[in-house]
Image 1 (tube, rainbow, N blue to C red):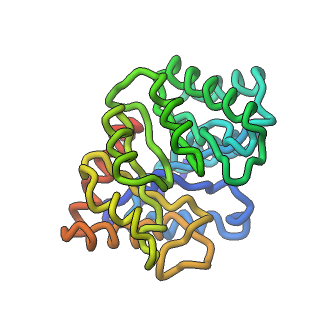
Image 2: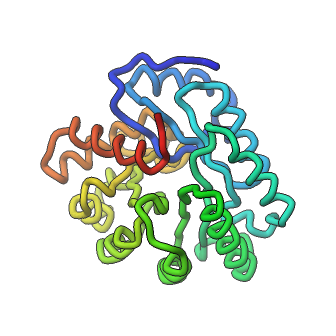
Image 3: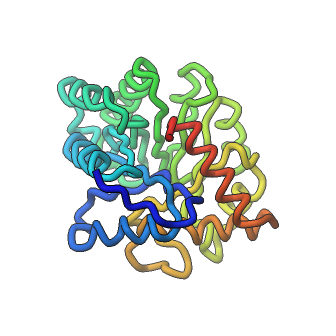
Length: 264
């Protein structure tokens, strides 16, 4: 297992997709840059059975990378009981720290609504049975996502709404249910007033930061391939809009991630 941490040990990228082909040419260099830049952990997130296997393999290759496994709503059409059981089998080791990315996506509708609802609810129940936090994808499906999560028990470590796109009222409702809110690089965009409001107003002890790499690169890297190191720009912007120090944002969001995902 590769040990590459050499930075100031401050930040955690709680959501990336390091198995994707966007990183095939320079994956090790991207990971090294993250370590040199101060990231203590990266969570690489599966979107189906194949990518979950790849995420776990990558996590097992680096001491500071961890994995999540699950079927993204785009791949709900591919989900079946055998696949779910294979995913469950991957969670027995210490490198899988969450079930995800799961949820609902009514923007692209790459799987039917029936397939999405069935896969979402079955995975919520499986994660609960395995005592794993969930990583929730919600795009254009706020009401149905809330309704699905309200059916589950409350708790301190329920999971996180990744790449949050709702308003402050929704964020507070989710926090009350036991979920964390994860802020992506979108918060750095000039006209992203709603997510800036959320990032500035929710309790800091319920806030996470992420890249969603290779997607959604923050300013000043907007339009380029995103990578875990760029979570630094997101933390800097949140510090600015909260009128606090970067170190406070880095420290608290990292503590939040360590608690939620039971990271060392």
